Every structure is written in C-alpha cells, then in structure tokens.
Image 1 (cartoon, helix red, strand yellow):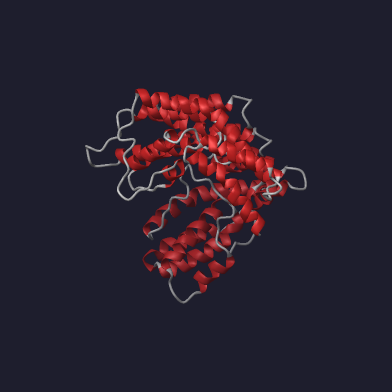
Image 2 (cartoon, rainbow, N blue to C red):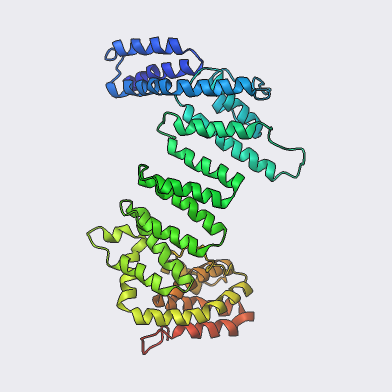
Length: 425
C-alpha cells in the first residue's frame, strides 16, 4: 500500500547518501527518521535495516582504510578513467555499470570501494571484485592474443581482497565463510591440488565452523579428487560427508552416491553396507531423507540380495556390449563414467516410453536418449529389464543395420535371476 511505498522511499535515503559519499548527512537523516518513526510510518523492523547498515559501516571503517592505504602505495592504473557513455557518480553506479571488458568492470568496482568512503556492503563488493578477477584471469588464459594479460599488480591486490573479505562484516548476500573458496582457488592455482586439499582439510577439521561450511570444503576436496581420477580419495570424501548426521540432506545423499559409485567400481561389499544403511533408516521421515524412493529400492535389494548379486553379475557381462552398441547407433554410451552418480529416478516414464515404442515415426534421437537412460536403470535394477527390452526391440527396427546385435543383447536382458519366467515374453 501507499504507506509501505512511502516507508521504502524514506528508508532508502541513508543508503543513497552513503553511496554518494555523504556519510554525515546519512547519519543525520537517520536520526530524524528514528525520532519520528511512527510519523513516518516506519516500524522497528524497517528502522533495524538501516541500523545494521550503520553497524556494518563501523566494522568496515578499518578495512576500508587498509584498502585505501594499499592503493596509495600501489596505485591502480586509470582508476579514475570513465568509459564514454558511462555514468559513475556514486558507489552504486560503480557496481551497476556493465562492460564486456573485465578490466573495465574491475576498475569501476574498485573505484566504488574507495572513492565514496566506506560502504556498508563492502563484503558484497569484495566478492564481486574477486569474481571479476577470476573471469579476467580465465579470459587471459584462453586468449590467443599473446599481448592480452592482467596487470602486474593484480595478484597481491586480490590477496588483499580475500583477506579483507575474511574479516568484513557480513550482509544477507555474502558471508565471511564464502571467502574460503576464493582462498582455496588461489592456493590451488598457485601451489597445486595437494596444497588446496591441505587448506580445505584445515577448514573441515575446524569444529568451530558450522557443518555446512565444513561439508562444502569437503566437496571442494571431492572435486579435486574427481579431476585427478582418484576414486579411492573421492570415496573417502563421501565417507567423511556421511559422518555429518546433523546435515541429513547432504550426508544421506553421500551414502546413496557412494553406494552406486561402489557398484560402478565393483566394490559390492562397500555398496551393500550403504544400501543397508538406507534400508534400515528409521523414523517417519526416513523415506524423505533419501532421493526419489531410494529407501524402497534399497529395501528391495536387501529382500532379494542373492538375486541382485546375480543380476549385477549378468549386467557386468552385457554392459560392455551395450556400450559398444550404443556408440555404433550414435548414442553417448558414457553412463558408466566413474564420476557420474547414478540417480534411481533417471529412467523414462511409461508415457514417454510408449510414445517412442509404439509411435509411427522412428524418432531416432528420442529413442537413443530413452534407451540410454533405461539401460542404465536396468544395469542395477532387474525390474528395469522389461522396459529396456521393449526399447531394444524398437531399436532393432529403427536401427536395422544393427538388428542382430540388438536382438542378441535383448535376449541377455530377458533372463532375470530367481525367476522361472523371462522378463518379457
């Protein structure tokens, strides 16, 4: 309503004045608002927003001065330069102006952090400056122009940016802990993967940090292990994530990811341990803890453990055949890549399957996509064999040049262990 609109307009006054560098006027403006809050239709919650801004400014002051002193000794090139057509008259302008060139955006954001006095959202600006520098570095690395490079002084400046970020008052958008990942990226870039893992390990081992931050650091370690094709190292990361039981959405997902990852790598005993954890989870919300009915799937595995093992033995024989065949018909054939977590819900719906199997048009691309998804589902779940065979039989018609190989593969999928009947008559 009109009173809310009026309140928003009035309360934005201090922020705008601060952005233009008029800090004393902003403080006076706020004192007026406080003294006549009810007359201005401002409640305590709304006034509290501005109070937090001024509280942040108090904490930002020494960090702002640290940045100013650094730039006095190490001036940034063309800091006062404004590109034609750009308007840069406040700290807000400096962060809002867009440019295709990272160098220009970097200059504007840095200028907005020093020219108009301390800003309550300095931490947001530090984060933005770091992001721009990362993009800038990437652009230079990927450029074919040998003359394209970042300025000589950018690395020590970015070190200072991250250091300030780690100490800066937080906003609703950016936290001090977010600087951890910037610090880790710099260490990885300059000192290598092992040094980055050591750094992230110190974060994980710091029990004074919240669990979310510690698990996020573990995920960074996992990404490094993945990029180095270190399966054992990655599995150890998932085990560590499993231990964070106060963050069930993460730890439970790690159990499922590790279970299927162990299946891919032939570590069935490790997989069974995890499927038992999932199946034996207790409580009314235990089913909700795991993605897309995985608890019921795990319960089914345990109820038919011998059958499951027999099926996995069979699928280990026909899976390489399928991979080769998928490549021959133009499919991706990459579903067993060691870092692709299997997701139990990733198989075609009956509606989509029926449309492709019974449709008059060949729909080669749609058939290949559905077949890849269903074959991976059937690889671990014998109940997926029936629909896989339906798709293979359709593929035998659509990809006639490979009909004999496709039919032979379909025959392999028809024998489900523990059943006196075939999966498909």
